[in-house]
Length: 90
Image (cartoon, rainbow, N blue to C red; front, side, top):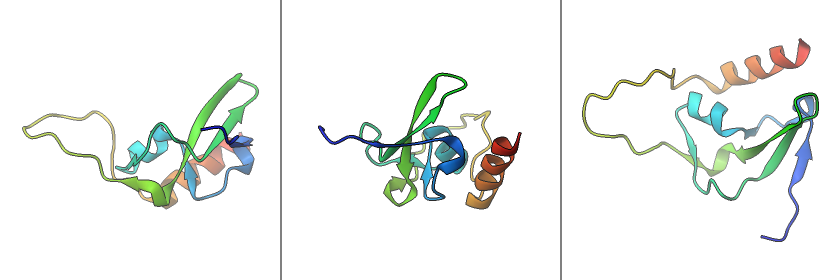
């Protein structure tokens, strides 16, 4: 994969791109986790995270049994976008 990925600052990330953590809260996973669509660069933290297009996601395979998950899943897309906008304002 020789092509360079587009890099965004947190306040510039388009509404169709999400980190794996944001996707996890929506109950989704990227189809190709090793092939991100872009990057988000947090210069103040010196960190960079992969971004994935929501159109290239799927629901994860569920384990059988009564496993308990400590993460909140199935959040709405709007909730994630609101949280993103609030974090940018702070």
